[in-house]
Length: 285
Image 1: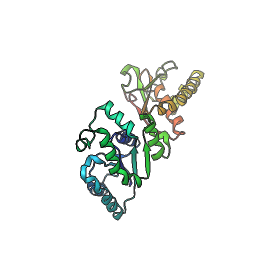
Image 2: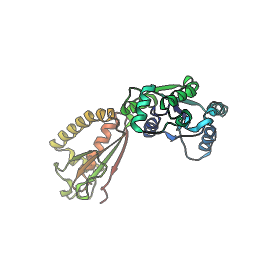
Image 3: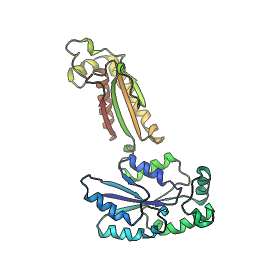
Image 4: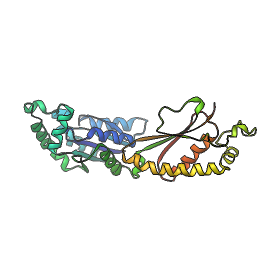
């Protein structure tokens, strides 16, 4: 199990970090009292469902029990559970501004007579021992949400490109465009195998249909231009923090041309080591 313990200052971006970690495959649990961490991990180990990457957030929202964090870490060591600690930090000025903007209540506010700044400084003191042993520290003072996500990807993905899932859909326009589409490409401009008797009942997953669709000069040209456009767009979508991109390719019925091009795009992107999935929505209609 790859276990990540997340802590840090309230308002420093732990929630955004958890969202980014979930997007790259972590099973995340938020606001867990430290005493429960070893028990929670043991329950995961005893379950039949594999959880290879787990992230647990524990911070001062746990109140006085946060002091039990180090005992919990010692217990994890006794269980021979390897872990890393990720600490989110930010300057007091930035945190104060964020609290004013969001009007969220600091977890230590009532203990400090309603002074947000005093609560921030007190929390910093409480968390300092955890910060000193942290394996990773992310200071979000000057990071946007997108940059924070990118930082998470750089730290916890072997291939940062995997932070964006790409789902490819072939469909028939006669049945409607998929609602979750980000990019929609129309290949009805190409000759239709439906009008060839020997191909009508076949699909784009079969070689005779592929050979028919791709024998035309305009099909080869369209393929190359789509590849160029997608290769241009993907880095920009990643830089904007998009966690999933849905590419939809449509023809009239969703059985022939769109299927061929969906498979071509999948094969093209596979070479880049991206996390890919594909669905031929209307191939059986």
